[in-house]
Length: 101
Image (cartoon, rainbow, N blue to C red):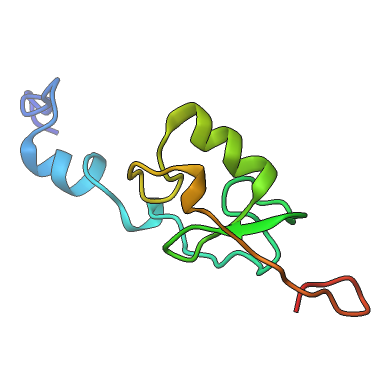
């Protein structure tokens, strides 16, 4: 062991250490994509009772999306300005098990 063994110990991170070890976006930090079930609202993630969709085709429960649009005036998915009149009311049939077809 040398007399000055800790001479190169630094009290800060170098750019190489920051880039390789501690800083930046790691692959494990990226959340995995998952698809919502067909009968779930994109805003509350609960099954909807009164389905409606926006112009992009995202399904919402009317009881959840109307207060959101009234309060913020934007689309919950895209963030663009929208009104309640732009929502499309859907009539989806249920099968004998109570699931939407």
